Image (tube, rainbow, N blue to C red; front, side, top):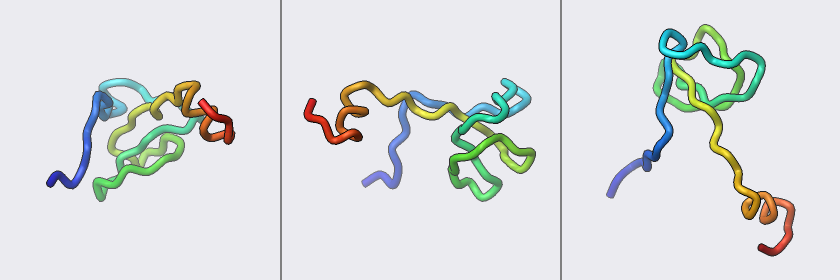
Length: 65
């Protein structure tokens, strides 16, 4: 059994690609934990949040698909 599932997303360092400022991102902290927040110098890497497709948005709103 795997203890995680990795997909197509990949981490980026600020040196590889400047993170967008003032928006929510996935951030990798020095302990190796992923958190959601805005970029800070404490973060080791960043990734964009996954897109939410329309059929999932409908589920979130309580509508049937």
